Image 1 (spheres, one colour):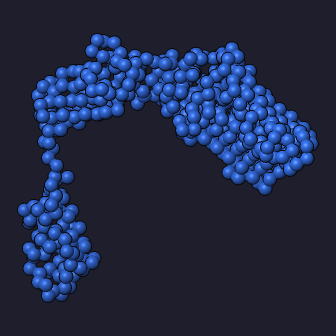
Image 2 (cartoon, rainbow, N blue to C red):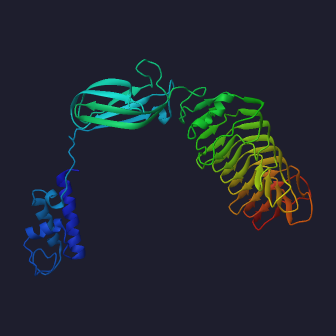
Image 3 (cartoon, one colour):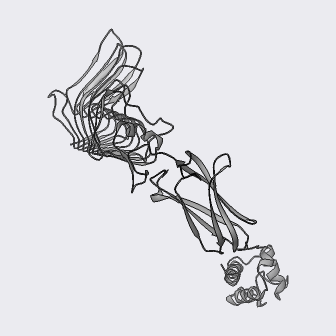
Length: 451
């Protein structure tokens, strides 16, 4: 902003304060203006023309005085930053805002000098401060950006080691630096750079199990993947949830034999869609996602999930626990949870063991069973075992067989079934159950059931 404009804004603000408040402001700026004026200490504070009133004329006097001052800066102690401070701005971006991957993307480095310089040099240094690549920039002109691209190659022409790099520009006494440029010297996938425009391509089992390397990237499956009855790696822990987007592309992952689901935690920004998981068995609590806090859409899972470990647990074909959105999905197979000792709480559902989020327009043809010993809780629901108070199930259909039982001894066991939800504290709206004729839509609970 120019100084004249700044003077007028500050003086106008000062005049407004005089008229609105009518008080003597003991600041350096106002003191200077008052001393410069004709006002005496016996007058009404702010009465610049001495007529005993606070009027627009007083404001005009202050404004004229302030504009006539040689520099408002002297009163406000403003020290504007010189545009010729000798610094150099350095920034970078990666192709399509994706990841910096050898052979897939480049780093666009932008340099802007605050003063004319000569013989500028750009260097890329590693974490140890060693130079891996450099380029002579020649003369830089004040305020005229220069852009340089680095493809990740070292001085020998081969890809630099994977790691974090810094970009430095030096020209005489002027210098600039940008840190935090992360580079990966090999592509762990069949292509792409992880951006929305160019997602990482997943065509093999190895590609899929490397999804864990980039939890915020975009992925797109390009082929069916057959595990041949081998175990799959469970990816993404609670402290490192999947926050990216996995597009199954309508393809299948099949023949998985594992003790844990494909994804452990999906975060609130994470999404999985258009994926089919079939012909698989899991001894863990679910097949696809242990805890879903994000979105699962247009997916199909056919799996046997049989779990018999832990004091209390949730168990379902899609998710053990859903806190996000499951939309337009299909579940088939078996969901079974059992515990013979202690005081367990076991919630088993065709889609999710426990639902605190939304399950919309889903179908489940899942045989659901739960069993406990003499004490505890075991419930079986066609869509969800337990629909919590924030749970919302709408336009869903279930048709699998349901069962629950207490296996041994006398005690304080509670066990029941529900065609959609065994225990409902939330909302069940416009859902149907077409399985066993003697099973109600909801087993127990105080939640809403709306046909």
